[in-house]
Amino acid sequence: MKVVILAGGMGTRISEESHLKPKPMIEIGERPILWHIMKHYSRYGFNEFIIALGYKGEMIKRYFADYYNLNHDFTVSLSDGSVERIGGNPCEPWKVHLVDTGQLTLTGGRLQRLASLISEDHFMMTYGDGVSDVNLNALLRFHQENRGLVTLTAVRPPARFGALEFEGNKISHFKEKSILHEGWINGGFFVINTKALSYIKEDVMWEHAPMENLAKDEELCAYKHEGFWQCMDTARDLQYLESLWKTNNAPWKSW
Image 1: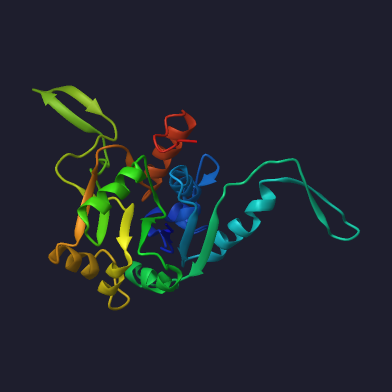
Image 2: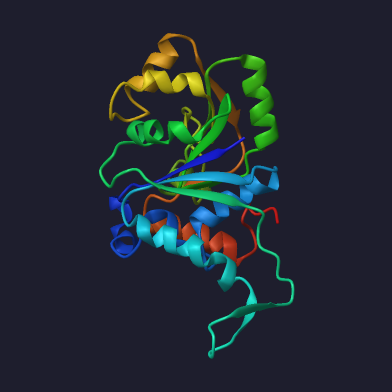
């Protein structure tokens, strides 16, 4: 089963970083968040990726074009330009399709442009700026049992600021980055039947008319994930994810 990753947006809310590189290439622990997402899928045996490129997509192409050599030791013969690998240093068993879907294309349009690369009945899809510890095997089983065309992973959003509880004027409870329990949001990590692509009529946001119409037709299911999920929308989010990684408390890490 192929995994589509939408990695073409401009990331305007984290412009401190995204003016230099596309958001999926912003690093956590010296690795792009895109790499972290792919490692999570790979843990569950999903090793073929289709990456929808747009804004500064050439940087993502260059990263994967150089990935093999930069993750191996090698000897270069300057007389004839030959390269010989030194030792093992195995790379990840990934096949990565890198597709320019347009700089200003909307998420639905990006999916539509990738349709010819997906021959299977189902594929997975997520966004290139969010990490989670969602169990992908359980997600897939849920999708198969509920038989909707699309399953999304529903998550409870992390609060932007610390949560406070009071007893009179005293704070009885303080929790930084608490989880909001008022409702659920779309956390990405989709399983999609290719028939759902027929709901995309033009270059639109996947999250607007296509998903709204799937819901009306009772073809949209939600796998409720109570565990860790965090998007990287702002510099504050990046700092939080980096702090988790540096203290070896990153819930999405499983390798």
